[in-house]
Every structure is written in C-alpha cells, then in structure tokens.
Length: 86
Image (cartoon, rainbow, N blue to C red):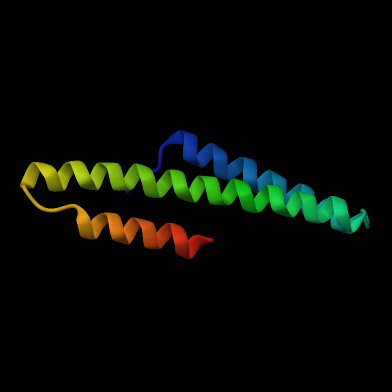
C-alpha cells in the first residue's frame, strides 16, 4: 500500500506531539498535563489508523467488485483491524 502525503504528515505531527510529551516529562510537568497530552497522541494515532484502514478498504472493495468477488470477508478483516487497534 502506498501512503499519501496527508498520512505521512499526520504521523510527523504525532511524532512532534510525542517529542513534546517527552519534554514535558523531562521538565517534570504536572501529571494531568502529561496524561492529557498522552490522550491527544493516542487519539491522533487512532484517527490515523482508521484513515489508513478505510482508505485501503475502499480500494480493495473496488478491486473485488471489478473482479466480481464478494467484499464481505474484506470488510470483516477491516473491522477487526480497527477493533484490535483500540
């Protein structure tokens, strides 16, 4: 699968968030602030994973429909990937 620039940029932003989080911890910031930032990082990762799965699913369904195959198993696999990521 090819990952477009939007997904790569999202991951770079998340990387920056993680670096900021580590800096906060090094500076001994309040645990509430640190946990809030951790939640933001996790949420950003979850949204990016969902974007990747949905984009890939859409592409795969189109390919299977063109070849006359059923997409049911593919959809189940995508849902399992999303559930597993949480």
